[in-house]
Length: 180
Ligand code: ITT
View 1 (spheres, protein in one colour):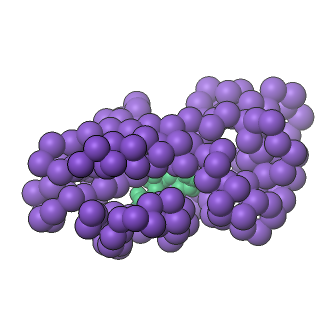
View 2 (tube, protein in one colour; view 1 turned 60 degrees about the vertical axis):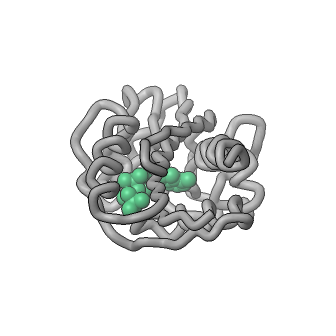
View 3 (cartoon, rainbow, N blue to C red; view 1 turned 45 degrees about the horizontal axis):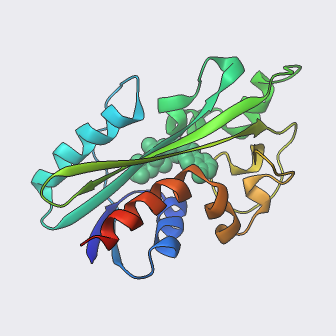
C-alpha cells in the first residue's frame, strides 16, 4: 500500500521504513501543528485532522516522547523541544543523584485512510548514568530498555525496533494493514 509518512525526523522515517518493507512508504518532510496538550493522542489527532485536509491518499504520522518518572513525566509531550534546548546532557544533569531512574518511551501512530485510526506502543526502561552509543537519534544514548544493559544508542536499528515503543506501534499498524 502507498502511504505518506509525514515527519521531519530522519530517525523515525528509517525505523518505520525498515519495519514495513511490504509497503510503499513515501516520506513527506513537512510540519503540522503540534498543539500543547496533556497527551500524545490529542497531539496526533489534531495533526492528522490538519494533514488529511492537505494530502490525498493514505497518511500516517507518529508522535512520541520520553516520560521520566522522577521528573513527573517530563519531558513527555515536550520531548522534541527539550531535546533541542537542553538535550541529553540537560536530562542527565536533572537526574544527577536521582536513584529512581525509571522512564518510558511512548509512541502514537495516527493512520488515515478515510478515517483516523491510532496505534500505540510503550517501552519501559531506565535513564543511564552517562551517554552511550552513537546510533539512533534523540534520547537513544541515555535510554536503556527493560531487560537490557545497552542503551538504544548502542543498538542496531533492527534490535531497537524489537524493543521500542515505535516498533510496537508499527507492529500493530502492520497487522491492521494485513487485513486489507
Ligand atoms: P515529527 O516531524 O515527526 O513530529 P519530531 O522529532 O518533532 O518529528 P515528535 O514531535 O514526536 O517528533 O518529538 C518526539 C521527540 O522525542 C523526538 O524529537 C526525540 O527527541 C524524542 N524521541 C522520540 N522517539 C525517540 C526514540 O525512539 N529515540 C530517541 N528519542 C526519541
